[in-house]
Image (tube, rainbow, N blue to C red; front, side, top):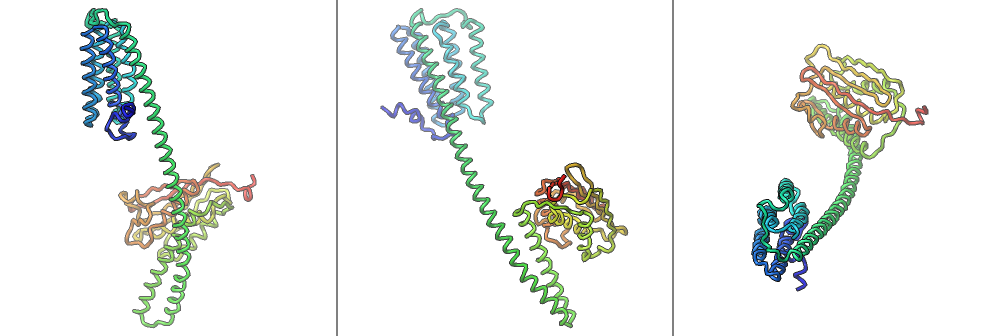
Length: 437
């Protein structure tokens, strides 16, 4: 007996938050069946046999609703409940006096409509609400006599029927609000559990990232020493080896070791950018650019490139020198490496300007340019546009990440065969140690 009063036991549908709207259809169908039989008893007591038949038909509609819903035809059951059930109540209300209060049942039905349709079925929800309101509106404008003046109650059981209908309506509204509260509570529980799980996974991910970053940084540093030793031994061997074929092998080994050393350097730069905060100091941009260009003099073909600098900045500028040096070095070295050998005049133009809050630096070349179908990938890790060129594919990835670490922006424009211009915009980071104003 106690099991009967457990609402969840009324349906065999899976008890989950996703299935809650479908479970409610079965629950309310049973409540409607019970309410209809209450009316049957009331009308039998008052010997109103026509009303008894009407009540039995209504109970039959809700029995069909329950059975169809339990067979997992949920949408069909909802339409039987809303269209047939409400439509029949409309006809019932038109055949009896308004004083019996059959129209009161429309209000809990409207409340329940918002519960039985899921978010994916919201267009059915709005259709159903509109349908119920239209039927109620028709009853109101026709003074509850859309089919003419009729009274199948024969003047019997009007007083008791009103109280039964009012009780059914109140119970239906309370039932709807109670379930709405239960659903909201379960949604909050799921949301909080999800947030807690997400926070835990984020903490685990941060810990894993820290450990991985520490490993990469340590391993990269540990690899530098043996590589430098190999380079030293190669340089010694080159002086002692006389055969050109063997010397060629040593030169190739040296080249590969230098590439690996450069790769490790770039990995360390990525790790340092992640691990360390922006450190502000006074930077003379003109001097920094001169040093970078001088350091790139070893690149093949650099002697044939004309460098032009147009620096319109108040110096020194407040920024992170080490990061800015890496950014500019990568951009300038790329401009040198990807210069068009077939052009008679090879040039790289560096322009710097400032506003009250930012300074911009653009590096323009007339090199080979970047094909349009590759431009969306230039900042990807390990991506190299020109496969014939040597490099790790990390340079522009590092540049973008360091620019973002500043809180700045980077963009570029390139035409294949014409050249490329990269523009970085970095915020001025004031440090009163150097800039007391």
